[in-house]
Amino acid sequence: MTATETMMPPSAVRPVTWRSDAVLGLAGALLALCLHAAAGFPTLIAGHDDNDSLLRLVEIRDLMAGQGWFDLHQYRMGLPGGFVMHWSRLVDAPIAALILAGTAVTGSSAAGETFALLVWPTLLMAAALTFIARIARAVGGSFALLPALTIGGAALHFGGNFAPGDIDHHNIQLTLTLTAMAALIIGRGYISGISAGTACALMLAVGMETLPYVAVTGLTVSGVYLLGGRAEAIKATGFGLGFAAAAATAFVMTVPFGEWFAAQCDAYSIPQFSIALVCGLGLAAVATALPHGRSMARPGALLALATLIAVLVVTPFPQCLAGPYAGLDPRLQQYWLNEVSEAQPFWSVISNDWVKGVRYYVTPVLGLMVLRYRLRRHNTPEQWMLAVFLAAACAVSLWQVRGATFALPIAAIALAAWVGDWRQRAASASDRSTMLRLALVWLVSLDIVWGAVANAASVAMTKAASEPAASAQGTCNRTTDYAALAAGSPTTVLAISNLGAPILAFTRHRVLAGPYHRNIAGNLFALDAFMGTSEQARAMIRDSRIGMIAICRGNGETALLAGWAPTGFLAAFINGHEPDWLEKLPQAAGQPLEIYRVRP
Image 1 (cartoon, helix red, strand yellow):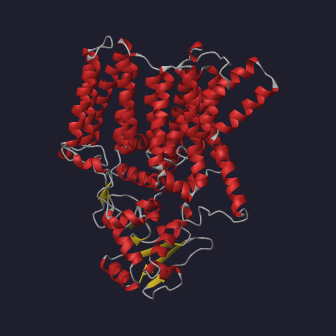
Image 2 (image 1 turned 180 degrees about the horizontal axis):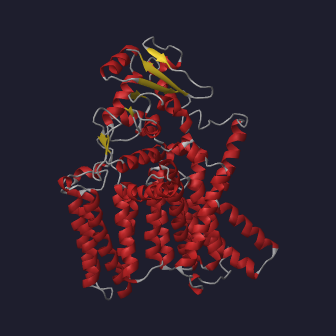
Image 3 (image 1 turned 90 degrees about the vertical axis):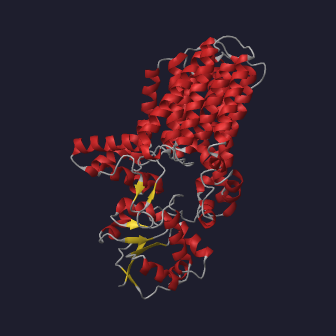
């Protein structure tokens, strides 16, 4: 694009109704569902290699079986008595409702679960795609609609968080973030402010991963109010009231009365609620008292509110400044957390898997570059707010790669506006050069193109095209892998942490290890048993009355533990030195999960 080229400003084309965009969003989500169906629903068959979704399903089953609403214990994982999970019932409830509805219609609880596993991520994807389309219209006009649906739909589909079976909290967190963005960028008045504030409160209640986006939303609302007039003051008032009211409602609904004053840094509790209440009510009070003009009273009032919030964070809850994993055992930090793929920083991703780095980081950076250019041409509040959210998502993804879950769809909005600009040019000047540039812009805006190119380059450099990729079956992620284990009488199973959630979901057994930072005792037990000597493992297994051991040689965690402790029990085991106090159960051909019964 050159400085002399002109284009119609985004404001020249009015956005259409929410209903029309919602229809398009639903159509895109249904198309993605059809693609999954054409592939045979592999994410349902393989459990999507998603421990969180499987454990969420277990948690929902426990709730439907009578476990208390406020009781978040996972009794079948860890040492006897289990441990308390940090997830929110606000996610469990709608999925449980879908299961009940599906069961009522089909007469089968299994069919009801399948119904929910299909419908829940599809509905969330439809909502997320609707918000992407709405924001793209506001930023890039009607020419950005088709690119938004295409680029945004591809980012959501290939990102994997909206696939059938994905019922963890990442997809709803992204959807709520897009909800807040759409309300701020497009909406006007109290209702849009209340909607954004409510979405932010729900984001906090669902999980602490979205704390940066809640903070960015609040700062954006405050900044727009500081620089704006009465209309912006009204929106800020609505945001503050919605944030405070929804935060209070979520607190009462999810925190039992006896724990109202117990601080939990990794879950929604009194620190997060009290700060949200002060932020919301304080902003609403300032915006209501000072609705006019740009006098020094506004920045002074906001500065006083920010000071009060800082004191509230530092004084009563200083322990939460260290982060949710500050108290994690050093061994779990070394042997578990440092190996969690979604928690890796940018430099680790680039050094260990540069193909993934290209897939996750190129299009968000390109989106920032596009927004920088567009802001020079059309300096609008909508584009500034989009740029702030995208910059925040990129910053989070540099810290932990899980931030790419947000950065890619948000970048798709900016890239859709860019493609829309070139579509508008092509509509008025359809020469060959313009059409070629339009095609190029389309290609570079799709993150799957960058991923495919990087993967092809990696294969060419390593000459590994003939090497077969690891299958889901080999890593013990298929439901059928656990059929033999499920047939046994309920007992305690010793297995690596990656097998913890599948064993709970597919069998009646209990397990010791699972990839959750609150399961400290159970995970340490499994580490000590697998990395210690065979005799140490035998004593631990006998004293804890463990009935079975499950081994999956193809799972990456097995190789890691054996490599870290080459003289340990697990390493000796997979090298063929099976102790005589274990009895191997019959294993069907092609089944990767090996099951051993502990002899009396």
